[in-house]
Structures are given as structure tokens and as C-alpha cells.
Amino acid sequence: MSQVITIQPITRIEGHASIGITLDDNGNVADAKLNYQSLRGFEKFVEGKPAEEVPRIVSRICGICPWHHHLASNKAVDGCFGVTPTPTGSLLRELMQTIAHAEDKLLHFFFLAAADFVIGPTADYAVRNVIGIAQANPELATRVVKTRQMAKMILDKFSHKTIHPVAGVTGGFAKPLLEAERVDILAKMEEILDFALFTIGFAKKEIFPKYMDAIQTLGVITTGFLGTVDDDGALNLYGGRLRMMRPDGTYTDFDPKDYVDYIGEHVEPNSYGKYPYARFWNEGFSMDLDQPRGIYRSNTLARINVADKIATPRAQAELEEFRSLFGRPTQATLLYHYARLIEEVYACERAIEILQDPDITNPNVRAKVEPGAGRGVGCVEAPRGTLIHDYSTDANGLITRANLIVGTTHNLGPMNMSVNQAARSLIKEGQVDEGILNQIEMAVRAYDP
Image 1 (tube, rainbow, N blue to C red):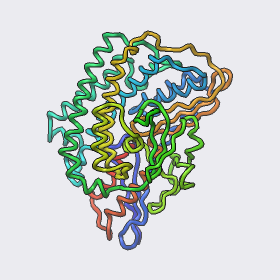
Image 2 (spheres, rainbow, N blue to C red):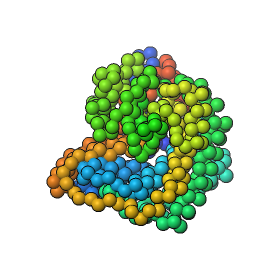
Image 3 (cartoon, one colour):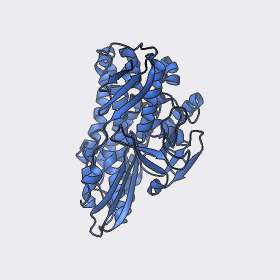
């Protein structure tokens, strides 16, 4: 008789999800599905609200990456009211975003993902966790905690709220950066960059080479990719053109405000979450492993794949080494972790660049704003993927419609496919144990959902 194996909850992810694996009469995998409860309801919560209030509301969507929702929302409201932020206001927004990226990537790699590689994917789960890592290497654990805290406290000290921020405002930023603050933050970001370079060096030497077989096989699927690039085709986390790359490496660039012409949203009966798909190639939506339709991925590996280059020197050197090993685009799901560390270096370098910009301490941080009717699309790259906020307002500046596509949502289809592939490759003739189930979880964990 068929059997259903349930993994609930999936451990070491940011949120709640489960996996259901159906075995056939021979004990082989007939199907495997990820169940992810992503419904938040904010698209309806904000209707009727003054648009300038919405950036403070939507930061509650996610306590891990509130800055990205906050800033995407601010950009959308800018569009509704037809205002262009001052140059310094935009720089301060991007500074906060890049620091938030640097902090977030340390959280995922060391606190959530690293135990699978440092302790081992089939080790006893009692030690396969962040506490086990701390016991194995107390000095490294102490440095991780202090470095992440440092990044968090930069946000807290300057903006006065590291979680649920309010410092971004329509037309720019709420306060200028003083010279003493600039010097202090710059010194701290240089220290965080040093740790980012140590981390990627450590991973390339001590982690990734040991797991090359798993990297090349576990959760590997064939999809397209989505990310943001600037006018030179370089990686950009704060703004630019969206680039949708097909599985063969060809791509189409488009303005974020036109996303509805390129991205559709599909609903599956087993999920509360929407499944975005590419409208304009391989028409339709299907998560079939052999013939997927419209499936693309977002997040770190996607951004590394779609970008022609990275504009900061150390991250560009890491990208070149990555591509010499794995090509472009690479489909290996576990390489999300490697790509995440390249982005960690970039985020630190970019924050330092912004802090060295002569305009960063200019007191003109906000443009004049008049509420009115309009439509605005705000788009940034959140740690978990491309984040889109799309609002319409009436003549009084009240929200009449909102549509959001959050980072993890782009990856719902791909995560289902990776889980299916991992389960089929690991479970044979009913032979399953806790180590195998954890490896299936690893296919989800790589996406940092």
C-alpha cells in the first residue's frame, strides 16, 4: 500500500513549512510536495489607508527582512505621487538596504545552513544545529554573533529601529547622516567586510569541496532566473532593470513597472501562496521535472546568474572564480549558499562605497511630496529574492489596490521541484531514515525561504 511521509516542521528556515512525500507500492517516491503557508493578507489590509502610512505597515510582513518591504513600499508610494527622491535620500535608503543584506546573509549561512556542512547532513540532529557549531568552534561562533550584532546595531543606532523601520519616507529619508555617524558606520562596515572575506574563504576551503557530489546532484532542477541589473548589466540590489534569464542563458530585460507583462501568477490547490511564472517563454505553468513551463528562480543564485558582472572588486573576483568552476547559468541548487557569500562581500563593499560618496552627508534628504492619484511599482532585491510592491491611489492619496510578489513566492514552484527531485533520488524501495529526510530539507533550506 502507498505510504505518506510527512516532514513537519522543516527545520532551520525562517517561517513554517512542511513536506509531504507519497511512496508507491514499491516504496519509491510517487510525489513530493512542499506546503508553505505564505498568505499574509497585506494586499487587503492596506486598501483605504493613506499611502504614506503603508511603508510602516508592510514592514510587518517579515521580521527578518522588514527593511526591504519598507523600502520597496516607499518606492511604490513615490511612484503613486510622482515624486523623485533626492540623490542623498536614495543613497541613505540603499545604505540601509545593503547593511540589512549583510546582516541577513550571516544569519542564514551560520545559524541555519552551516550545520549541514560543518556538522554533517546525516549527523545526529541533537548536535546538527547552531549550538553544535558553537561547541565545535567557540571562537568562530563568538565572532559570528558579534559581527551580526554589529550590523544590526548600525541600523538600530542610525535609524532608531532595526526591525519595523520608519526612517524611509515618501520622497527620500527622514533624517540626514552626520559626519560622526558616517565615520563610525564606515569603520564598522570595513570590519564586517573583513569577516565576509574570511567567511567565503573558509567556505571555499573547508566546506564546498567536501560536498561537491551533493552540490551536483541534490535538488538540481532546470529553470530560468530573475534578478535586477543596472544599465551596465551589473548586479544591483536597490534598483535597475529586471532581467529574466531563460534556462539556456538568453535573457530579456524590462522595467519593473511592466512586470505584469512578463510575470503571471498561478494558484495551486495545495498552497495558499501564489506561484509566479514567466509569461513570455515556454508558455504556461508546470512544475513537471522533465518538462517545466514558465518556472524561474529568484534569490542569490538567480542574481549571480543574470548579472554580467559585479561592480565592486572583491565580489567581482569571487564571481569570476565561481563562473570558472560552474559556468553561467548554473542550475545547482546548493550553490545558493556559495552565491549568498559572494553577495555578502558585495553588500559590504557597496555599503562602504556609499559611505565614501561625498553626497552621503548632504542634509537635503527628502523631496517635496503632494499626495494624489497614480500608480507606483517599487522593486528591490530582498535577501530571499526580487520584491515587488505595486500600488494604486485615488485623488486623496488613499490606496485603492495593492499587489505584492515577495521574494520567497518566486521560488515556491522551484522549491517544490527541488524537493521532488531530492526525494526521488534519495528514497528507494522504502529505505528512509532521518539523515535522508534532512537532505531533502536541505533542498528547501538552500533557498532560504
